[in-house]
Length: 164
Image (cartoon, rainbow, N blue to C red; front, side, top):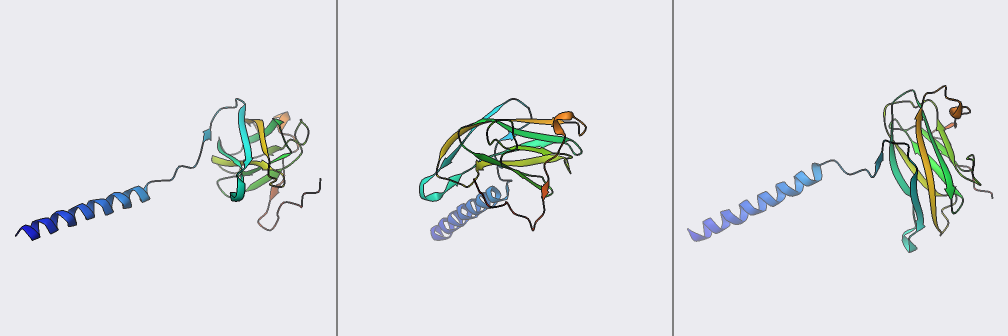
C-alpha cells in the first residue's frame, strides 16, 4: 500500500510540473521595449565577439494612416535603420538624416495600427561599439516634416550593397 501512495505522489508531482511547463510555454513572449512617447531615446550597438552584432531593437506604437518619423539625431558610427510594420511592410534607410550619415525613416502613411519594430545597426554589421540618439514622432500624414516619405521595400527587394 505504501508503494502505491508513493507512486501516486510522484505521479501527481510530475503532472503538476508538466502543467507548469506547458503553461509557461503558452504565455506570450516578451517582444522588447515598447515606446509611446517622442522623447529622445539613447541606444548602443555592439559587436558581441563570435556571436555577431547585437542590433538595437525597440517597438514603437503608431495608429494607422499617420506618419511615423524616426531619425538618428547623433551617432558614433555609420548606422542604418529598418522599420517593420505589423502587416510586414518594411522601410530601410542609411544616410538620409540631418547628421552625418544618420538614418531617417518617414513611414508615411502607416498601413495599420500597432507596434512597429525598429532595428538600428551598423550599415554593414561591422565589429564596432557605437552609441546613438534617436527621436520618434507620430505625426499627421500632411505634416511638412513627413514630406518625401521613405519608399517601402517589397519582399523581392533587399538592401543594396554597402558602397561607402
